[in-house]
Image 1 (cartoon, rainbow, N blue to C red):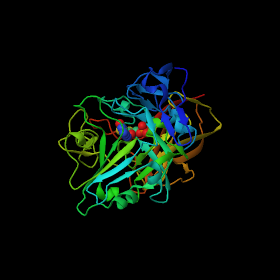
Image 2: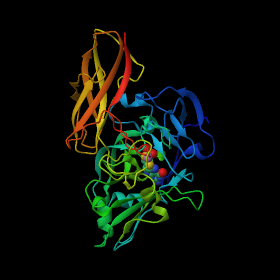
Image 3: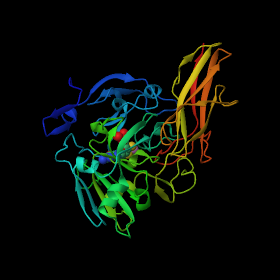
Length: 412
Ligand SMILES: Nc1nc2c(c(=O)[nH]1)N[C@H]1C(S)=C(S)[C@@H](COP(=O)(O)O)O[C@H]1N2
Ligand SMILES: [Mo]
């Protein structure tokens, strides 16, 4: 594959985005990635880097449909994740590779007074556009650290990213369609489809109250550019504070229901992406949950980004440690750092606040006084009185890891 850029065919009235050679050729696999994140027991092993259209080299999880992880070093480049470095996740093999925005329509139907069929321009004209910086994190981010191991992609910590999203509030579109009084849920579908009739489509639902709240957005821009094709061009549902599974890509259908979403096509709500229905959303390792509920909001998390496991830092010199913290939107309250394996902790300084759904940078200047091995740890709390736990809890999906991470380094 020599042409790694997306193909953009523009004429006066047409603007076609094409995922290029995506569907036709096996992706080019280059050198093995040594990125194993922060953990000590990551089960993925070495994974190759691969290049897809509009993307820099990312970590290959699967090639069809594309499942790509962001190399962890990207998170040290800044709190905004570049479009070309943003991770990619699809479930269905029949994903779009060519979308002509002239033909594209968003339909809004179901329990509404006026069914809508909107071009992208008509959608943009519905309301004043708004912007939100928000983290999109896959429920299975860091699943490769689950102990005991669980089924599913053995992800390290790169199935997350933070971007500025521009769009119109979902509720403006729902209000234009006129939601009926007994509406209960709204489901969202994108242009990707299952290959086999028995495979459920990828559809996600929000409760009507959530859908009509100020937060969900129908976004066409990411970091002031069109959405990268693989991240959902031309339109993506943004659900700030919620796991990425709700952020439906290539959004084509919004369906208001006067009942709870159910049946075969509700598989990704009612069978997959569920957590144990208890406070910790966890069970004893290796056991099943009696009752489950759909996964929802992001727990508070933090990472060191300026050094990774196996890194070397100098003794007796000022070292600035840097990283990120985020939660579901109550805002980060504190970030504490330990350089002695958790015996003592120091408060880090929080960086610029890009909004309550964004990554928040933290920094801490420190001096190591002894040569040898050191364990660095970072722990965040939020304004909702959540603090990261020392020990990872467990659930069968390997979802929502949020324990305090440890990074083993050498002081020289
Ligand atoms: N249409 C569509 N949207 C989708 C998915 C999908 O398979 N199809 N996967 C979801 C899941 S589980 C995740 S984690 C995010 C990933 O978003 P990204 O690929 O833009 O990073 O997309 C979500 N939206
Ligand atoms: Mo996901």
